[in-house]
Length: 296
Image (tube, rainbow, N blue to C red; front, side, top):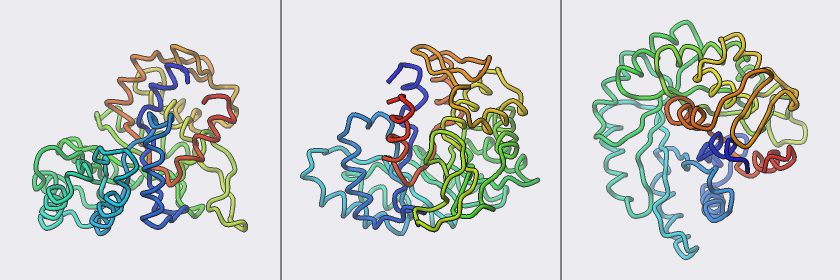
């Protein structure tokens, strides 16, 4: 893989195999993750995403896979719906209980009011990366400001299993531009199984509806170009809407879209300080489609 593409995709794919549309049983998802950690493509692999109610089960599954030769604790991001002192205390207990099997240092919070963001972050011990899912509505900027003030990061949902769950390129571009202006790092989730935007099936069912879905390369390229000051919000929307692979350029030392390009150091800065990862219920599907594009 080219150096610039390696920088763009390093630890980019958080594995959410338990979630739609894959919906794998926890044990199956854990076995997949263990296998991915041993493959050459592991440099693209991020954390294992699990609901808080299943952390104990994941630790048990991890112990059952201890004979696979992978003796390191798995990096895990825990999904929570209740952002309160009780949830914070529970997260601390889970981290202490399973530290030999799981490295619990990330938590993702379902949408909450702006005023609840700082109290939850303050209730956690140091060492947690906290991502707050934000709706793309008129209250977005207020909640983004609260996220930054609390030292946390944002989370944006870019898809789902219904047409209505998919935001438009313009909506996502507005989110990117606000994050850039305010200084908010973020992660993305949902609907990012494919490298390029296109008409895709919403689920793995043979009778699934199809819709225009976002591409993870579109999102990553738009984010790094915007972070490097190369794009306006309107131009970022055009990158997000791009369906023609020929309009992208993946060279050894830079990545580009049409007349815009960004270097490896700038890509690394954008991945560290801006778009940190994206969740996908599949790790194999993105890799297969990258290979079909000649990128892996």
